Length: 275
Length: 252
Image (cartoon, rainbow over all chains, first blue to last red; front, side, top):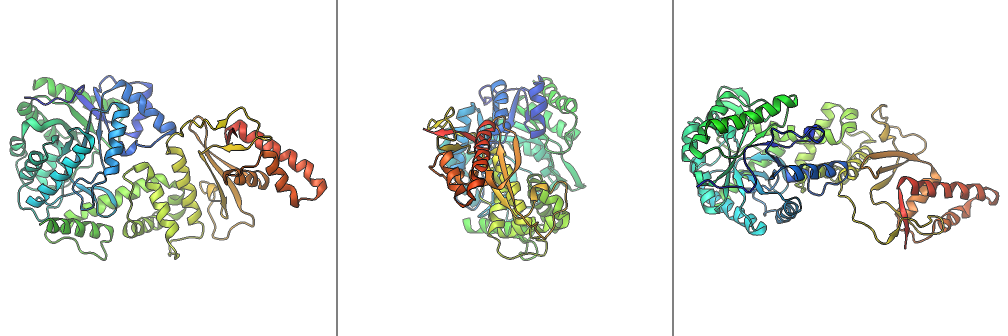
């Protein structure tokens, strides 16, 4: 059975600061829903804060967290989880997703660092995801992240991901660009990774562009258009999973809006062709 | 063991905070760990450069990068919220006791100025204040200030740093700078004179005196014949503060 996030379907876009003004002036019809980072919006007032309502009133919204450090060694930031929950209620946000990574030790580093793929880490991380779900009273989704260095692994990243999802009983945000980047960086078949995904846990997908640092080293920059290999992989994922909601992420080197929105439209085209 | 994978995680972050002093975890090629070094440093410096454009410009790339390196090494930022990252740099820097080679005399005030500007721009909209009468007279009543402002006494003219090169030698007189967010959410910066700054400082300190009493008190030291014009000016300052929203009214 295909899992459903209420009100979310089609092609979404990660909302970034440079789009706020143009989208307020001309709401983009290409975008079915938006994804935004609660850490950019919670507690923000003034001119910036007043723009949020424009989007949450017109589109369904998913919260995509950046700083929870779900795999971090420091105690879980429960205050952040409660703030996110209250903020989701206030704005009618449909789902909270976070990265299967860590961003802090005893202080924030604000970047997505890799969790060693060990059995103990599975138990630890799954316990923290459950803790988040208990506080929020709802299921969350975790995202498979790009990683560049593997430390202390006892199992493959696919096995680690599946084990965490199972033990935490949470959803998966499947980032196909990350699957592609990791398959090159760590030398495996991205389609085999997708074949091993527990399909009924995939709540929605991400796609994005990356940067070729070296033939065997790609960086998930979100700073370029989506590569053809990743579009192919997205179509492959849809054939297996069905055309589930998918967000385009673009953080740097923003193209003119028509180009950006054409990529959003292309997501929908691929979804239709795989329906 | 929990300890094992967390020890690896801590070893990686220790290395990313201070690559010179702390070795990376064994195993991965250095060019792979190097991506994380670049990502962490690049991300934090990009965010902070956007929050401190004047500091970035006045210091130059090299000194600004040295500042960010020290911040990453010495500080443990707590906020998960990106709009509050400027406050983390500011809070850390105010605790730093010793001067560093990249550290000009005006830097402390400049970081305070830019982080306060950022904080006021983004902070949550204040809750309604039923204890304030917006129609009250700020001369005969106790003036109530807007929470969306900050009065800074600056030895260095750091607020002019967009257009002038800041100098280590301070000018003869300090500047009194009023930073505020107006009712439309725009940030405004205004230099105040001694009289209006002194008045506002007392109001912000939580004085329970009326506007007229505040002025009387301030005039104790002034020669008798200078008082009436100064009091007149002071009243004009208070009324103007009310008009532009620096004062929200009077306490009921």
